[in-house]
Length: 126
Image (tube, rainbow, N blue to C red; front, side, top):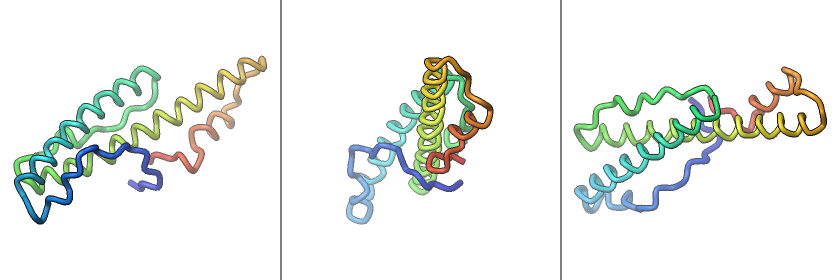
């Protein structure tokens, strides 16, 4: 899964610098980021359902989080999934705008035009 475009907002807590100095604080920050990203994931999932876009498999929610290393993997995975959902939501929003513009000019988008909107190389999510 290539991440050419990173649209995900930064986590407001800068706990990562604590990794070498205070492992407990780092682990607590990692858990806070996990909670933040899960809430973000649920909101993005609901947005995709609402607009009728294909859903992203949220494998990160099933990953084990029994220790710090597993938490790190899970946070990295959920960040990638959330980024995919943001990109997908953006592409489908662009498609809706293109369809509205076409309707305003009394025409329909051709399948090629729809495909071009969804597969514009700067916004590919997979």
